[in-house]
Image (cartoon, rainbow, N blue to C red; front, top):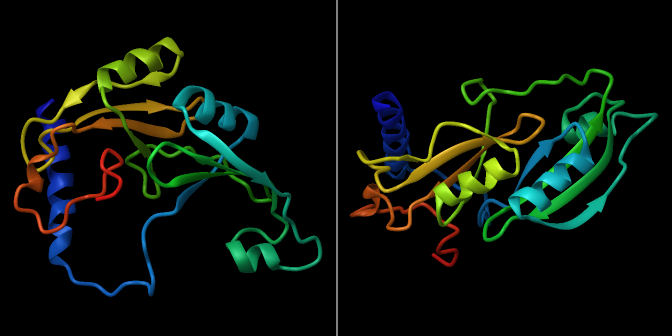
Length: 199
């Protein structure tokens, strides 16, 4: 438990110190628009995000392929014979969108990363009550991990977290910090939050 708290505090400290670094910006960069995820079964993924998480489907389109040339490789860095069978965009409350891809490709691998793997990732959803989220997810048969875990020390103190998984292994998180986090006091840069989307 102490190791988890230390890890969360370390991550928050690293994020908090990012404000000290000075960097240029992509011209006109305004914020995070979407995260793209390749899924094994589009219907399963759309059903999970809409019927379990509570996102709303905005649009679907595709397929995309290039039988004769290298368009797919040149545009996306994938095998030239890769096919995007379908793309579906979902919106999840206040925040950026999620773009779901259903690909087929001659060199396609099934790599379901752990959070500790290089290239591993997770999607976090802000919720009002992590305990209520856990009860709901458990009731839906969703695999949840230990938690809710309140962070009580360090820059991230004030947040409560719970990790859970989509049926195909995608890592997700429910997070809440209704009274903010400790680092915010005196911080030059405060993280964007869907609980106050205009800030």
